[in-house]
Image (cartoon, rainbow, N blue to C red; front, side, top):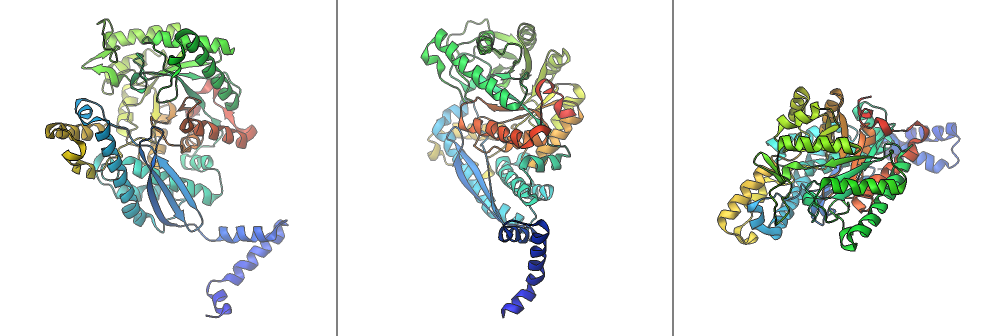
Length: 516
């Protein structure tokens, strides 16, 4: 084929002429770069392949990373694992057994992405998020995403979302805002973890997290400064009161002093706020994670203690009294998962008292049907959206051998059954489209929306863009000290700088920002 024939076949002469004319009209200072960019935009982006690999999350556990290739660029995303189930059978398997199962699950997810998912998405336009997500979901007809695994699906979906933003030549948060149907101008208030407890720390504190919300900051930059200063003052106070060994940190980067009382933890944080000079400008929040210490219909506040007093085995009504007292004595504005995941009755009782925001995590599971029920019954008034959650285990995991786990056969069977049960209960958001739909559902109910990381997150900062694009008003990303936490906060600092004067820090409107 001659040069002339090649030019005619691909209509290059006309396209080059159009690019040159555009450069002249724009008075481009560098015509070569301008023409190259113009030609690049003239060719529509299509997905050419999807490749996955195993990486390590913030806890050193296996996670899925995806590279989505288009004919123009490569876009990367990762999703954290759902963590390991708990219980007697899980304990019998031991850490080694659980890790082997999770590693196999990630390996299965990688194979599925490289084979089935890649083949299904080749040729698709990365700007068509809903169509891409539907194509992914069509590959998994099983309930609870048990075939592919929600995290495998989500990593691909996020990578496609990034590719769509790149093709539109807009920041990721603006692309998400277009998908949501909102303007990307609201910067969320950070719910910064400062103390860890529960199953995320080795102290006696039963609840999982104590957080601070710098609602009195003028912008996100000041909010992070206030949060960071308070965090470091808290370290000094803990050091003075409990010694250096109590300055260890928990799973989310919060300090883990040797305390067992919620009030004692809140007192420490209040002292840190006052020492930092931010009294009245910072509110408190707690993540109770009550499912972790629910025994039957009661709550064991000494579940981590080997020497139980018997005085801290509380009924759900007792817990309501405790929460009511805490809200009256402290500037406590949000309580996450205050009861067991299936205790709809008492969650409703607490919500109707209107003492604070009652945020549903395990109660809702980011499941549209459970959210609908909660809205109708007024069981809570805020959604905790964990887009990096879900069932990472595929059916292939159940083929693991007894020898591989080195546990008795009966325990192996129990462990498998427990895994099935556990992973049918975890958050079910597996695509960006699904995340957007549950956000809309919460907004329509005039709920607060807290976009959240999860334990053992990766360094992917997607949830920062999601929080802005969805106008969530709240973001929970851990303490200001771990890399997988800071990557979200630092991305929000960049976004606020880029939006400039058009940006509005949610501040005192942290709960209503998502409904405006």
